[in-house]
Image 1 (tube, rainbow, N blue to C red):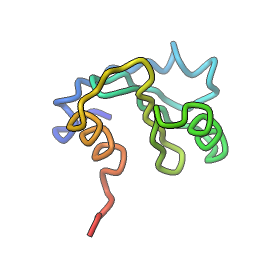
Image 2 (image 1 turned 90 degrees about the vertical axis):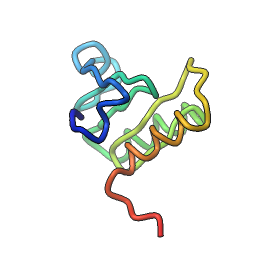
Image 3 (image 1 turned 60 degrees about the horizontal axis):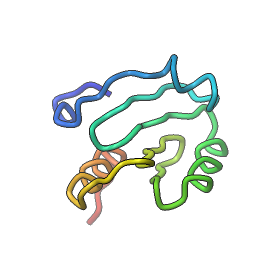
Image 4 (image 1 turned 90 degrees about the horizontal axis):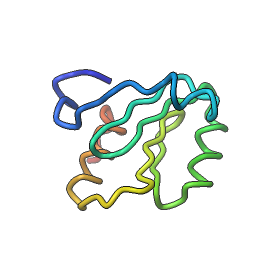
Length: 89
């Protein structure tokens, strides 16, 4: 999760705190949401369904916006990070 591309969202690893209850591979707390990587696509899909509009998902990776009051630009930054290798054209 650490790279020059996402330094501005201040990622902090929280895997040991989050993953035991979510059964995930890794978790990162950032200024724009919590990024969680799951072992299985089905687990990411399940949590995306539970969280609804408070999350976005890309395959096994999910960003959780729960409990945050984010601006449109912050949400866009989170989505751009989640879909880092996606060409939207």
